[in-house]
Amino acid sequence: MISFKEAKSIIQGKIFKLDSEVVPLDRSMGRIIFEDVIATFPSPRFNNSAMDGFAVRSSDIIGASKRNPITLINIGISSAGVPSDLILNEGECMQCMTGAKIPSGSDAIVMVEHTTGFSDDPNVQIMIEVQPESHIRKRGEEIQKGDKLISKGTQIAPSEIGICATFGYGELNVSKKPKIAIFGTGNELVEPGENLKEGEIYNSNLYVFSDLVGKAGGEVLMQDVLKDNKSYLESFLSEALKSCDVVISSGGVSMGRFDYVRDVFIDLGVEEHFWKVAQKPGRPLFFGTGNKTLIIGLPGNPVSSYIGFMIWVWPVLENMMGKKGSKPLTGTLTKSFPRESVKKRFLFGNAWIENGELVCCPASKVGSHMLTSALEANSILCAEPGDGILDAGDKILINVLPWKTIS
Ligand code: AMP
Ligand code: MG
Image 1 (spheres, rainbow, N blue to C red):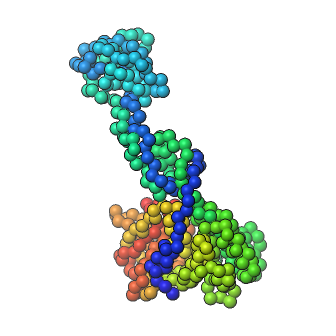
Image 2 (cartoon, rainbow, N blue to C red):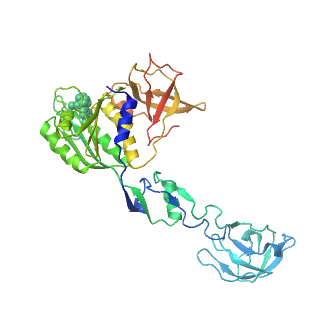
Image 3 (cartoon, rainbow, N blue to C red):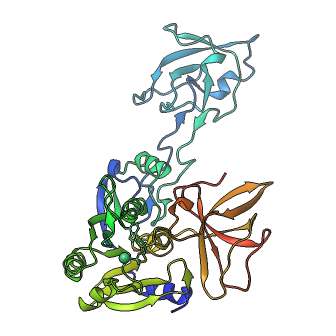
């Protein structure tokens, strides 16, 4: 059995970075940006109006008010997408709509509300004086050409896709998705929807894995539930080692008489880096490599499998795509937590804000076969090894599940 830290650093040493691929912008959601996104032009791109109104020369309307309107001559219209070439001379104005280019010669916009309005009458009365640059969005005031907009390693979400569209990127260079094989093992496993015979249970782990792979940004290429039979395992695995970046299994890596997964990995030439880690749940945790493919064998108990995926597999997938991982938070326990003397202890739990402080409590069901403990959880709580239980009031690490929020 090796320490959690040692196991992490062994895996870290074997992770390889995936190549990039170009995807159309409308297919880039959720993907990881492979290189910095740079502004190829300033924003705003040109001086434009922030209001529907009249472009004026501010010096023409000094002292204008409701009581003392100043009349200007309207010489045309500048609208969004249809700029005017005309140049404003003294005593002139131009209708200028929101987003429209500011005509040459003018230095400010008067809101239409402070005028006699848009009409075909060339005489326009201005009833307010304005400072130079009023209601003008200046070229480059938000972003300069060459500025970094988004750092590589960022996941595309609504803000990022909006910015990429704003700056005209029709396609993006993103990390390829890790290709994943997932399999479960066990003669007892039956697919949901089918009838159970004596001693059988439903396969739940692969449903969890399949969703987690997608959420982490990977793509499931191969998926199967295999009997505890060496030849089934061999044929699935030898194919997975050829085509996938990561192979993730559930079950069959413990000390049971029919736990063949580790034997088959080794028979197929997989190099074992470790097999047992000082953690609970999930002490039997296999990690090996076959050529470049990373192989992570998680135990079968549903809570061990799920937590094992989040603690071991999820960061690997993020890292392969160049995504920065999130750090755990620290919160205060509202109930005791069963700390272990030499193992890191994980439990599903809930974290929330109380009186401005981050607090949390572990799920009430602690068995690694009790998947209902995940239902109400928004986090995985983690206690470092130590003597005795952690009490209410003690601090603990909180890994918020990436698709959950704290409230
Ligand atoms: P194992 O690691 O194969 O010894 O399995 C440990 C426990 O997890 C056993 O009770 C199995 O029946 C259960 N188990 C294994 N695989 C799955 C699965 N895919 N879905 C639900 N439970 C499973
Ligand atoms: Mg089994």
